[in-house]
Every structure is written in structure tokens, then in C-alpha cells.
Length: 90
Image 1 (tube, rainbow, N blue to C red):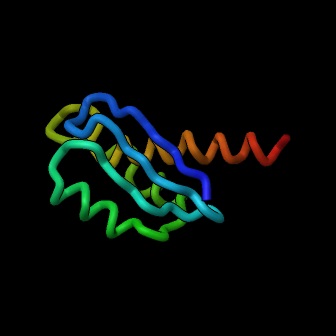
Image 2: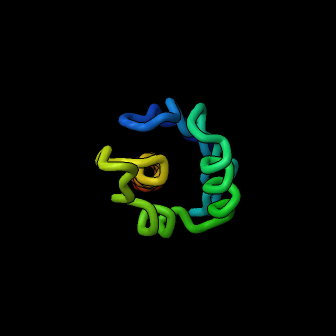
């Protein structure tokens, strides 16, 4: 299981950590932000296909900020998937 950390931009949480295993997302943890919402996101997405997470959440906006907790998670997962793909290509 590969663990990833991501420094967020434009949202209340300052960071997101998660793990990928066999294309599935696990152990999502937001640093800061609204604990009720971020804990719910983590519970709902546990074990979900990582590509599906990106598809579902990318582009979600929070109050006109141009991003959101969900969008930042999607961006982080997308970057992790690109890293995994590059690692496999070697």
C-alpha cells in the first residue's frame, strides 16, 4: 500500500493524506477543516476505485472558491494515479 500526502490550496484543510492499493483509495485523512464533512468524505470513499473518486469529485466548488475539499482530494488522487502509472512504466 502506497501512502500519499498532498498540501491543499484554497480550502480550510491544509493537507490530505491517503493510501492507494490495487487502484483503490484507503485511509483518507484531512488535516484541519470541518471534521464532520471531511470524516464523511473519508468514510464514503473508503475502498472506492481511485479513478472513480477523480471522476466523481473533480471540479466540485465550495462557495465560489473555485475548489473544495472534494475537488482537492480529486486533484491529489489524480496526481497519485499519475505517479503510480509512471512507476509501473519503469
